[in-house]
Length: 413
Ligand code: ZN
Image (cartoon, rainbow, N blue to C red; front, top):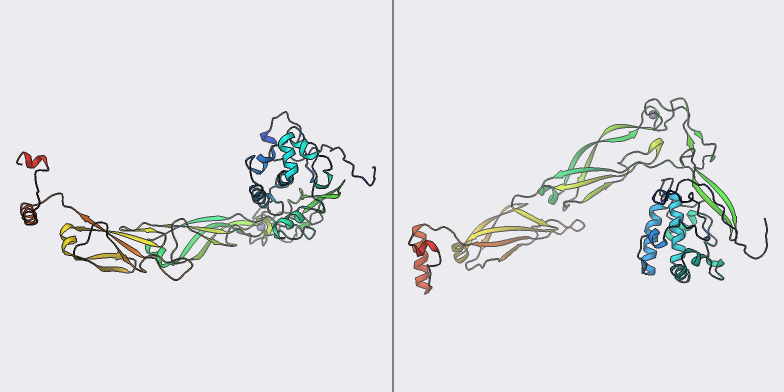
């Protein structure tokens, strides 16, 4: 290998790699997928559009590009995503971001395509990640070390799936809060092997391919120095251990399906569509992997006469014209029991009476919303003979012209 003080751009060698996630979408006659190193190289014609990779418009602002990258990187970072294709996907996302976040390279990319972005004069300095040695370092740089140190990584078992439980509660329970006993089936620790997946009397052995680290690294020399490519060990699926004699109960999975009972506390003020997350109550991961979460999705039964909008409750109170004119007392159902409400003489249609603190509680405060009584003054559509005479007498006294409006009156019916 030639070495000199000046960076030398080496030709990329095409490695028949694992299928990358986008290969299927490409032309079947396309070249085999290639591993994209951190450094950028002249494009292959099958390269995806960089804007498409990040899922942004061509005119996207720098902030939009950064936001899209962060979102995708958090989703596809190999320390977070155990999908074997995550690594290549992450590289592609990274690659696209390196070009589109650099105004000069982005401009060249827009004008000349990928080759333009990579071959700009004097561009060697920003062609890749200077000083980064692995995914975790990149991750740390962007996300404040949430993924943990790259070199300290050991084999880790896969996590278990999240579960969802649909819980139906009454209107009153949603407002006042309640405790509910729920029962569900879940993949839990196999009692025969205590979750190891190994037949009792045997132990899982350290994976010989990765020496228990759960990942394999390949080191390449590039013009920017050593580039370390890290991927999950294919032999042990990143777990670092191998079960040679599987447990007969769980067939080496370390889990069996079981019934679980749980008491769930529903806080006052919960509403339709809210979810309560119970960490570690989801499915256990295989072979002792960490459990997922249980999401309790709350469904609230409707109330026969109250409507709810957040913390506010609404009650429609039908009253007659006589009650509106003369005043009355009505009974309003509340979640604390029936309440008498005074309708003053001369109440107009669409008047709103507010019962303060009779609504639903704020989830994070002790205060409650209001109950709004909406007065619905109803004009009678049918009158008895006596009622008609009384209303006609009323109209005469008030000097109002009445009658003759309907066909029945005209025909004398
Ligand atoms: Zn077992």
